[in-house]
Amino acid sequence: MEIRAYPYDYLRLGQRILGDAVDFAVNTVGIDLSEFERMFLNSKVVIQFQNGNCKYIAGVTGCELFRYIAEENGFELSDIDDVMYVDKSREYWCGWALAFYQWHSAMTFAEILKKITLGEILDLYPKYHEVDIMRFVEHIDTYMVEDMKATRLKRLRKYYQLSQSQLSRKSGVPLRQIQLFEQRKRDINKTQAETLYNLSQALNCEMEDLLEG
Image: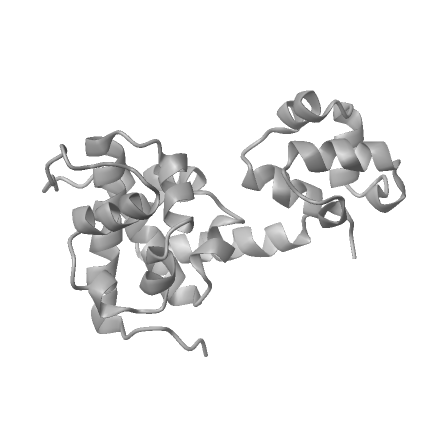
């Protein structure tokens, strides 16, 4: 049984607050969803929220939550009014669903978003926004298991939201070689240092991060 950071009684509030924060950031402030994700993970808010700090999961509005995130990232919001809509957007559902999964799984937001981005969660909206939230949880659980089977190269590529073709162009490593590495048909541990270096530079990581244990 998972030990969760805060009781179920606070969960619905936390879901609404994070949902409103994403909605406000994207649809009122005009922040790209991937930029919101970066700002969120770069802020102390993410730690306080997942640890169940009452101020962040129940004591602020979604707009206020994003203002804290923005302030920590040096983003100025003084000329933008707080706006929350009755009709909830796809972006609201994205934050709402993420908050539930984080609470349910007891994983950190960083652990979750390293394996599935907010953009990928948003893509699930048409299929899962009108069904029991546990259907969404089951899907993400399956996604997590499949991701753990993936090579480190594939996980890092997906984290940076690059297709295999995009990574090939960015790194100069042939597409077929990347495909073979990800299919485990070629051992990345035995490849040339230059290839590892080029991939690591393209993925903003150390060469060792690409090696399989």
